[in-house]
Amino acid sequence: MKYAQYAVTLAFALISSAASAQPERHLMPALVDAPSMIKIEYADPTNAELKGVQQRLKSRYVLETLREFLSALRLPRELTVRTAQCSPKANEIVTSLEYEPQRPVTICYELIDKIEKIAVAHTRNEDLQRKVVVGAFVQAALQETAYGIFDVLEIPVWGRDFDAADRLAAFIIMQFGDDVANYVMGGTINLFYWSDKTWQGSEFASRASPDPQRFYNYACIAAAASPWLFSSYVKDKVIPADRAGPDGAWCDGEYAQVRKAFNLRLMPNVDADRLVKMRSTPWLAWTPAK
Amino acid sequence: MKSIMQAALAFGVLTWSAGALAQISPEFRNDKIILLEGTPGDGGYWNTTSKVFKDEAGNPYRRPVPQFRQRIRTRMMERRVLEEYAEFLSPLRLPRPLRLLASDCDGKAWGDSPHYNPAMQAIDMCYSFSFDAEAKFKNLIRNRRDDKWWTPGSLEQLMAGLYVGVLLHETGHAAFDLMEVPVLGREEDAADQIATFVALQFGKENARTIIKGFSNFWGYLAFVSKADPGPVLGPDDPNYRDCSKDSFCSYADEHGTASQRYYNVLCMALNDQHRDSFSDILEARLLPEGRLQRCNKEYKQVQLAFRKTLLPFIDPAQAEKVMKRTWFTAKESQE
Image (cartoon, rainbow over all chains, first blue to last red; front, side, top):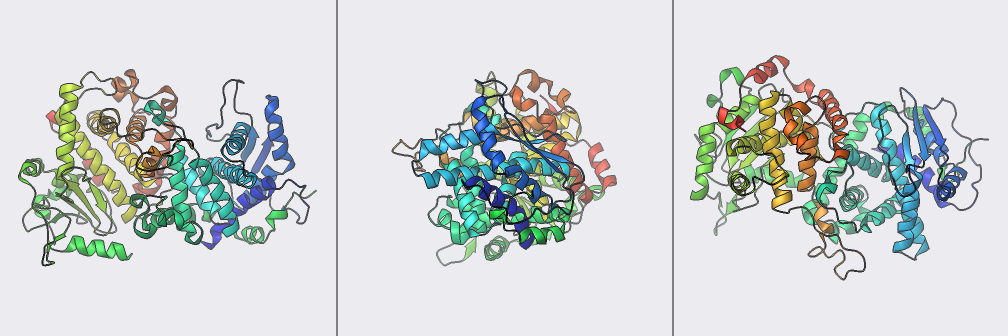
């Protein structure tokens, strides 16, 4: 359990990078004692509107941070993580590209753009807007990267891979400590809560799960992982009793299930020495070594 | 843990732990697969609920099966559903016993669902579920033969396929529990994956019976019973997130929606390797093109998970015997 906290340093770094409007100070050299199998790329968008998103991510070293964090994983081969424009045409918005084995993991500029627009449309509270954008971005980055990890490490996945990636992302987010769990998970859950899309007919054939379903999946893990932060989801029946169980026991079971899968399938691929170093890294102030 | 213990005690009251192994063919016997009797000699087909109620004096008792559902029990006994399923599971090398029973479950007129009880390590098939499913399939065959969401089958085929699909689904839950298999996705979807993946390993006729019975049940719920969640309300609506009026809350169910389960089952069947066995489903375009394109990937994902986590628990020689045996009657394979 304790070891699982290594993973959240990624999200921590992403949060700090994405949340801060100020240029980061270089306080800590990068941990470069082992060559990373993670390759990164900020692909150039053709859509001029998305160039700003690319620039923001680039100037905040989002992918460098992601690579640094993932270097604790002993990957047997290279995995490329990139940010890119996913829509081939201007009038067709694509916010997610399905991961294909042996291909790069892609985080779409359109998704980040969409999250920002949803946040602005739903609240005038700038703090809440920021929380939702940061939380949802970290969640999306972790979920997309999870597909690549499943592939590279040949992790057996039971259940829909979309939900498996989501549950792994949720688990990681909750290992961060209270402040970050509250911020990132809170932002993620808010975004899903705002969803007002009605699914019907063949839309249910989608590989993705509806946002309300994701809301309950994340909320259940949050309530189980940090009841002192999220117990109101159970007490106030935000999560209905027939999902949460008596005193949240069924959510506890879901969380234990993901934790077991994480410990059995991911932990054997972690470099323990590097993990120790990473856990002592002040990620809030982290930037790449010059 | 406390609730599990309580459930185990409640379930265990008045239960006969002795198995009914004598009814299982010696060639397909597995000492870890036990038919759990409610009363001696019932062979695992309880004549009561499995739920324990209390009378006015506080004494525990189980309610008898109502007369109108007795025929389901009789038919299951005649068909040797539990015995044959125990034989089917004989290749499993289980670390702990798995118990099988059929009962009137909670005694509800409608809505009891077959389930795996981890406290007792028991799969409980509910008579009321079968009763309800049969009524649905009869309506489908008699009145909705021209619906475009399904390819017709006989009542016997649909019922037999559903039975096995449900038993395999519950066995999936049992396997995750008994073999401590790590599950990263949602367990209910994972159990459906096990059911469909195993079905596909047993040749075209068997696979068609199970896939059709299982998928058409979810299809019926989705397209006839309209069980999928309705409109999700926006923030301007006065009933926003009021669970009695806003379908947002319907998504809290740990199961996928009826439509999701229908499409998931079809997608598993339409992988490259088995697609030819389901050409009618393919030609009827029951699965949208976008999803169809990733079915092979989904099948391979499940294949890898099965190979890594469950195959080590299967006796290959016994599995070969099971795979060679004919499990469905001619009527049950009839389209």
